[in-house]
Image (cartoon, rainbow, N blue to C red; front, side, top):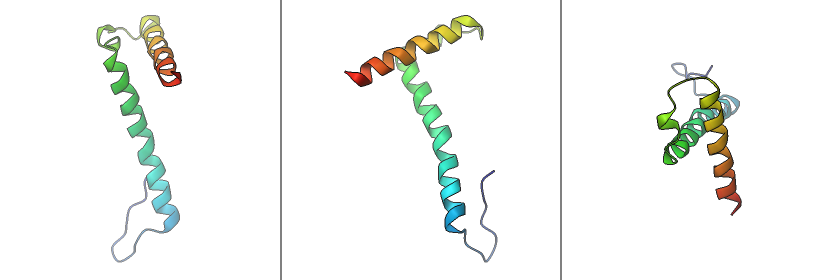
Length: 69
């Protein structure tokens, strides 16, 4: 849970660092989903079964290959 600034009291350095690390996770997830949409594979996957799992794995492998090249 993020730390909030109380009236008349600034956040401590540890609290600010904790808030910063909490913000990174949703941002990274959003960027990964955006990259997967670039391959237009996830757009066609409507089910939450094995088909979606395999599509996500395939996109992740293609992304890793693109980063390695």
